[in-house]
Length: 506
Image (cartoon, rainbow, N blue to C red; front, side, top):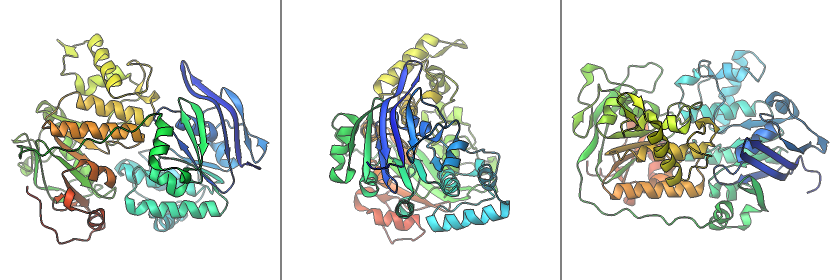
């Protein structure tokens, strides 16, 4: 490649016994969109952190516009013209959107707020510039990260899973933006597990496996199956079809649920749904339409006032005023969308994170931790769910996002719940692992488990769910029979239209 914008030679990085990157060579051309493909734990995010100055390589050289470059911090990277949007967000929750942006972009609050609104309208990334970050959903926080990065006017833009929490309507708009940036001379490093996105957007792809480069390809010259095989080194698992089952008992029922207590939250209005044993119900919707509020009410993180009883039932029992622990004792398990905060404690080992929800499985005896059993449980989860980690003593925060997600999903499934609730179950998980998780969920459904899924991946919902409902501005559509529904109909509900459809059986 003649005169690449960015050139890496022999880049290596290790963390103790873990070799994250080994002798990486990479050239990124000016005005190109270059994909980085690989399984969870292949070294993609570490490599991006080295380019952005978050970490420094143990060996190797970096050249920028033909000149040697050594970055000691992200601030130096931004001054050089490199911007990055992380998979795990780097926002201060106690600050507003505009205050977070002001940490790296100079200007008055009013001027920055107007720029936020303008970019939001232009790129379909609308967000309130004066909202506190702690009040925002994961999808809205992603929008803040994207806007903040664009406001630094980068020459190289690094995007780590940028579409993982964007609605389908915004993805193509984002791609149009990225193509305009490319045509204007901006280079883009793009990490995504969605191979159709890679094929649609990228002109080059570098494949990592086990921390090493295993190939450089034009992704447009290969189909998705070929790319997946190159990426994971094996064929994809075959999907498991759902089996027809007799109508089971209701394991979860919401009856006219209203929630308007928090003035900073999206109000929920007359939300009704039912999930039976042996079926999967999916909740679709654009991020920020009440998903976080609904998840908190179902999980028990938020409890209803006593005058709003008989609106949430689990296993036939009114649980609206019960906390999360009490609901779990009834046979409920939950995978939250925020894995590094609500799903796991980053500074604790995986074995100790297992205790957070699996302690009833004899991991605590007579008030004392049984560390041997906790390690055994964790090792089984690591093995069965292909979690790439040195072992149960590894800190949760040391895992890649996808591997931590596999651990949390595996931990909750191993509880053998009657009712399993997952929010964004395969967010940030590579294509092979996502297929394995979905296959496991369908198997559990076939065995009689009741499963509720909130996801912004329409393809995922259509693959998994028996019924789909759409959340829009805090109201829920009627349940739609998945096999009789087209994605375009779901899309209409997502933007507030109301197709005339027959209601599925409750």
